Image (cartoon, rainbow, N blue to C red; front, side, top):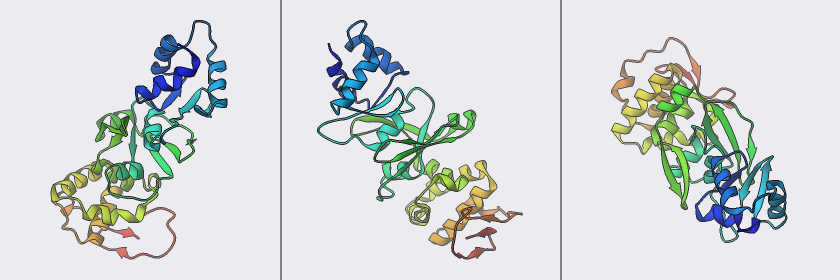
Length: 247
Protein backbone atom coordinates (compact mmCIF):
# COMPACT_ATOMS: atom_id res chain seq x y z
CA UNK A 1 0.00 0.00 0.00
CA UNK A 2 1.00 3.65 -0.23
CA UNK A 3 0.78 6.92 1.69
CA UNK A 4 -2.05 8.12 -0.56
CA UNK A 5 -4.25 5.27 0.72
CA UNK A 6 -3.94 6.26 4.37
CA UNK A 7 -7.02 8.56 4.53
CA UNK A 8 -9.22 5.88 2.96
CA UNK A 9 -7.89 3.34 5.47
CA UNK A 10 -9.09 5.61 8.27
CA UNK A 11 -12.44 6.46 6.68
CA UNK A 12 -13.24 2.82 5.92
CA UNK A 13 -12.87 2.15 9.65
CA UNK A 14 -14.83 5.31 10.49
CA UNK A 15 -11.88 6.91 12.25
CA UNK A 16 -11.98 10.70 12.05
CA UNK A 17 -8.55 11.66 13.39
CA UNK A 18 -4.97 10.65 12.71
CA UNK A 19 -3.02 10.95 15.95
CA UNK A 20 0.62 9.97 15.48
CA UNK A 21 0.75 8.88 19.15
CA UNK A 22 -2.34 6.65 19.03
CA UNK A 23 -2.94 2.90 18.84
CA UNK A 24 -4.84 3.29 15.56
CA UNK A 25 -1.86 5.07 13.99
CA UNK A 26 0.52 2.27 14.93
CA UNK A 27 -1.79 -0.20 13.22
CA UNK A 28 -2.27 2.04 10.18
CA UNK A 29 1.45 2.62 9.80
CA UNK A 30 2.12 -1.11 9.82
CA UNK A 31 -0.61 -1.90 7.29
CA UNK A 32 -0.35 1.09 4.95
CA UNK A 33 3.06 2.76 4.88
CA UNK A 34 6.00 1.05 3.20
CA UNK A 35 8.90 0.23 5.56
CA UNK A 36 11.11 3.23 6.18
CA UNK A 37 8.56 5.77 4.88
CA UNK A 38 8.73 8.80 7.19
CA UNK A 39 5.32 9.71 8.70
CA UNK A 40 6.14 13.43 8.49
CA UNK A 41 6.70 13.14 4.74
CA UNK A 42 3.46 11.23 4.25
CA UNK A 43 1.39 13.66 6.30
CA UNK A 44 2.88 16.67 4.50
CA UNK A 45 1.95 15.12 1.14
CA UNK A 46 -1.59 14.38 2.31
CA UNK A 47 -2.01 17.91 3.69
CA UNK A 48 -0.91 19.44 0.37
CA UNK A 49 -3.39 17.17 -1.42
CA UNK A 50 -6.22 18.26 0.90
CA UNK A 51 -6.78 14.75 2.29
CA UNK A 52 -5.88 15.67 5.87
CA UNK A 53 -6.02 18.92 7.84
CA UNK A 54 -3.39 19.57 10.48
CA UNK A 55 -4.83 20.88 13.73
CA UNK A 56 -1.82 20.42 15.98
CA UNK A 57 1.60 18.83 15.86
CA UNK A 58 1.10 15.13 15.18
CA UNK A 59 -2.69 15.53 15.02
CA UNK A 60 -4.72 15.61 11.80
CA UNK A 61 -8.39 15.48 10.79
CA UNK A 62 -9.07 13.07 7.94
CA UNK A 63 -10.87 14.91 5.12
CA UNK A 64 -13.71 12.99 3.50
CA UNK A 65 -14.06 14.36 -0.06
CA UNK A 66 -17.74 13.39 -0.25
CA UNK A 67 -19.20 14.68 3.03
CA UNK A 68 -18.26 16.55 6.18
CA UNK A 69 -17.37 14.52 9.23
CA UNK A 70 -19.57 15.48 12.22
CA UNK A 71 -17.56 17.75 14.56
CA UNK A 72 -18.69 15.74 17.60
CA UNK A 73 -17.05 12.66 16.05
CA UNK A 74 -13.80 14.55 15.56
CA UNK A 75 -13.95 15.87 19.14
CA UNK A 76 -14.40 12.41 20.62
CA UNK A 77 -11.77 10.87 18.32
CA UNK A 78 -9.16 13.33 19.60
CA UNK A 79 -9.26 11.49 22.95
CA UNK A 80 -10.03 7.97 21.76
CA UNK A 81 -7.21 6.40 23.78
CA UNK A 82 -8.12 7.98 27.13
CA UNK A 83 -11.28 8.01 29.30
CA UNK A 84 -13.50 10.89 28.18
CA UNK A 85 -16.99 11.90 27.13
CA UNK A 86 -18.62 14.75 25.22
CA UNK A 87 -21.08 16.72 27.35
CA UNK A 88 -23.38 19.80 27.57
CA UNK A 89 -24.23 21.51 24.25
CA UNK A 90 -22.88 18.89 21.85
CA UNK A 91 -24.31 16.02 23.89
CA UNK A 92 -27.72 17.68 24.14
CA UNK A 93 -27.67 18.28 20.38
CA UNK A 94 -26.72 14.61 19.87
CA UNK A 95 -29.87 13.67 21.82
CA UNK A 96 -31.99 16.04 19.73
CA UNK A 97 -32.73 18.40 22.62
CA UNK A 98 -31.26 21.51 20.97
CA UNK A 99 -30.84 22.38 17.31
CA UNK A 100 -28.56 25.42 17.46
CA UNK A 101 -25.19 25.24 15.68
CA UNK A 102 -22.58 23.93 18.10
CA UNK A 103 -19.42 26.04 17.94
CA UNK A 104 -17.89 24.83 21.20
CA UNK A 105 -17.70 21.15 22.10
CA UNK A 106 -16.98 20.34 25.74
CA UNK A 107 -15.09 17.10 26.39
CA UNK A 108 -14.59 15.82 29.94
CA UNK A 109 -11.17 14.35 30.81
CA UNK A 110 -9.31 13.40 33.97
CA UNK A 111 -6.53 15.81 33.00
CA UNK A 112 -6.32 19.38 31.82
CA UNK A 113 -5.87 20.36 28.19
CA UNK A 114 -5.80 23.31 25.83
CA UNK A 115 -8.69 24.18 23.47
CA UNK A 116 -8.34 22.66 20.01
CA UNK A 117 -9.69 24.44 16.93
CA UNK A 118 -11.01 21.77 14.55
CA UNK A 119 -12.43 24.24 12.04
CA UNK A 120 -16.18 23.87 12.44
CA UNK A 121 -15.92 24.14 16.23
CA UNK A 122 -13.50 24.57 19.10
CA UNK A 123 -13.04 21.54 21.31
CA UNK A 124 -12.69 22.53 24.95
CA UNK A 125 -11.28 19.88 27.30
CA UNK A 126 -12.47 20.24 30.92
CA UNK A 127 -11.29 18.47 34.06
CA UNK A 128 -13.12 15.94 36.22
CA UNK A 129 -11.63 13.68 38.87
CA UNK A 130 -10.89 10.20 37.52
CA UNK A 131 -13.25 8.40 39.89
CA UNK A 132 -16.14 10.73 39.05
CA UNK A 133 -15.40 10.46 35.34
CA UNK A 134 -15.51 6.66 35.57
CA UNK A 135 -18.90 6.80 37.31
CA UNK A 136 -20.46 9.38 34.97
CA UNK A 137 -23.49 8.53 32.86
CA UNK A 138 -21.97 8.23 29.39
CA UNK A 139 -22.11 5.67 26.60
CA UNK A 140 -20.50 4.72 23.30
CA UNK A 141 -22.68 5.74 20.37
CA UNK A 142 -22.28 6.53 16.70
CA UNK A 143 -22.94 9.46 14.41
CA UNK A 144 -22.69 8.96 10.66
CA UNK A 145 -20.91 5.71 11.46
CA UNK A 146 -18.20 7.36 13.55
CA UNK A 147 -17.84 6.36 17.18
CA UNK A 148 -18.46 8.92 19.87
CA UNK A 149 -18.39 8.76 23.66
CA UNK A 150 -21.24 11.00 24.82
CA UNK A 151 -23.04 11.94 28.04
CA UNK A 152 -26.52 10.68 28.71
CA UNK A 153 -29.27 13.32 28.77
CA UNK A 154 -29.33 13.62 32.55
CA UNK A 155 -25.53 13.72 32.83
CA UNK A 156 -25.26 16.51 30.26
CA UNK A 157 -27.76 18.60 32.22
CA UNK A 158 -26.10 17.93 35.58
CA UNK A 159 -22.71 18.88 34.14
CA UNK A 160 -24.20 22.19 33.00
CA UNK A 161 -25.79 22.83 36.40
CA UNK A 162 -22.63 21.98 38.34
CA UNK A 163 -20.25 23.76 35.94
CA UNK A 164 -22.15 26.61 34.23
CA UNK A 165 -19.06 27.63 32.24
CA UNK A 166 -19.22 24.28 30.40
CA UNK A 167 -22.40 25.17 28.47
CA UNK A 168 -23.11 27.88 25.90
CA UNK A 169 -26.88 27.46 25.37
CA UNK A 170 -27.63 28.03 29.04
CA UNK A 171 -31.06 29.60 28.52
CA UNK A 172 -32.38 26.43 26.85
CA UNK A 173 -32.18 24.36 30.03
CA UNK A 174 -35.72 25.32 31.02
CA UNK A 175 -37.06 24.00 27.70
CA UNK A 176 -34.92 20.89 27.94
CA UNK A 177 -36.10 20.04 31.45
CA UNK A 178 -39.69 20.56 30.33
CA UNK A 179 -39.26 17.52 28.03
CA UNK A 180 -37.94 15.19 30.75
CA UNK A 181 -40.15 12.47 32.19
CA UNK A 182 -40.73 12.34 35.94
CA UNK A 183 -38.30 9.43 36.24
CA UNK A 184 -35.65 11.39 34.33
CA UNK A 185 -36.18 14.40 36.58
CA UNK A 186 -35.83 12.23 39.67
CA UNK A 187 -32.56 10.77 38.40
CA UNK A 188 -31.33 14.22 37.44
CA UNK A 189 -32.14 15.52 40.93
CA UNK A 190 -30.28 12.65 42.58
CA UNK A 191 -27.23 13.22 40.40
CA UNK A 192 -27.29 16.97 40.96
CA UNK A 193 -27.45 16.53 44.74
CA UNK A 194 -24.56 14.08 44.59
CA UNK A 195 -22.54 16.58 42.57
CA UNK A 196 -23.07 19.70 44.68
CA UNK A 197 -25.70 21.67 46.56
CA UNK A 198 -25.26 24.52 44.07
CA UNK A 199 -26.12 22.19 41.15
CA UNK A 200 -29.26 21.06 42.99
CA UNK A 201 -30.25 24.69 43.72
CA UNK A 202 -29.91 25.62 40.04
CA UNK A 203 -31.93 22.57 39.05
CA UNK A 204 -34.71 23.59 41.42
CA UNK A 205 -34.68 27.10 39.92
CA UNK A 206 -35.03 25.78 36.37
CA UNK A 207 -37.73 23.27 37.30
CA UNK A 208 -39.70 26.03 38.95
CA UNK A 209 -39.27 28.14 35.81
CA UNK A 210 -40.43 25.22 33.66
CA UNK A 211 -43.52 24.67 35.81
CA UNK A 212 -42.46 21.13 36.67
CA UNK A 213 -43.26 19.28 39.86
CA UNK A 214 -40.25 19.19 42.16
CA UNK A 215 -39.01 15.57 42.35
CA UNK A 216 -38.75 13.98 45.79
CA UNK A 217 -34.93 14.05 46.00
CA UNK A 218 -35.11 17.87 45.97
CA UNK A 219 -38.19 18.31 48.15
CA UNK A 220 -36.31 18.50 51.45
CA UNK A 221 -33.46 20.67 50.21
CA UNK A 222 -33.18 23.88 52.23
CA UNK A 223 -29.97 25.56 51.07
CA UNK A 224 -28.09 27.68 53.56
CA UNK A 225 -26.10 29.74 51.06
CA UNK A 226 -27.19 31.67 47.99
CA UNK A 227 -25.59 30.93 44.62
CA UNK A 228 -25.65 32.59 41.23
CA UNK A 229 -27.51 30.88 38.44
CA UNK A 230 -24.52 31.48 36.23
CA UNK A 231 -21.43 33.27 37.52
CA UNK A 232 -20.74 36.34 35.42
CA UNK A 233 -24.25 36.41 33.93
CA UNK A 234 -25.28 39.93 32.96
CA UNK A 235 -28.80 41.30 33.18
CA UNK A 236 -31.40 40.94 35.90
CA UNK A 237 -33.39 37.79 36.52
CA UNK A 238 -35.66 36.95 39.45
CA UNK A 239 -34.18 35.86 42.76
CA UNK A 240 -35.65 32.58 44.01
CA UNK A 241 -36.13 32.64 47.77
CA UNK A 242 -37.04 28.92 47.73
CA UNK A 243 -33.77 27.86 46.08
CA UNK A 244 -31.65 30.83 47.13
CA UNK A 245 -30.50 31.40 43.56
CA UNK A 246 -29.69 34.76 42.04
CA UNK A 247 -30.97 34.58 38.47
